Amino acid sequence: PAEPTYWGWYDLGRPPIADLLWFKAFNDRVLAPWNAAGVLSSDRFYNIRLHNRDEAALWKVWAALNTTLAHLVVEIWGRVSLGEGALDNMRYEAAAMPIVAPEAIPPTLTAPLRDSLLALAARPIRSVFQEAGAQEPQGVTLSGVLPDRRALDRLVMGDVLGLTDEEQLAVYRAVLDLARTRLQKAESVKRR
Image (cartoon, rainbow, N blue to C red; front, side):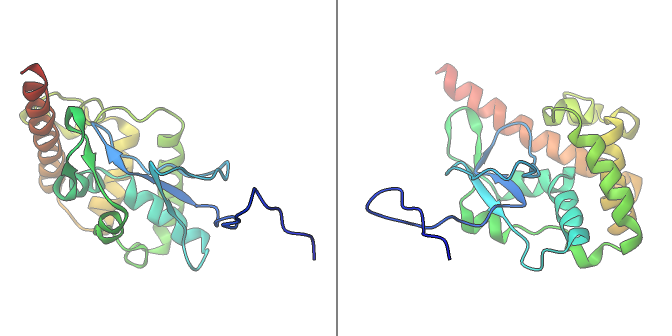
């Protein structure tokens, strides 16, 4: 076997490379990037690594973490403790957040999810307001949501969870309402 490489008087070993990354804090956008470059993360990210290393499950988890529904969970579970209204979540809180279980997603949706995710990953993720196509909750329409965002959400919220269009619209509106309220409150405190 090769000699171990030591970085000094200590050796913590090389941690496993994450499949996905989860931010420790969020502001007006929520996303879980694919760690395609295999980078080591800092203390501002949490590593997500699937135990079974199943590629289909990885696509499903990546999809679940990048839906507007996941943004809603972050808005509800996150703690507003950082400047300018950012939502903070500790590792144990992030691990406890409910997401759509990969086994709940039928295998027939793996390819459509992959296609939706690749389309979404080809561009920068914008603020929730830009993604939803509205600045106010009552201004949200399903046709106003960015098409690639809507395609992913329709698959997960509609095809997997069975939410009606009206229920999906309520998710978009709730996310905008919670994010707007949180950011406005932070702005008012900042002005004082």
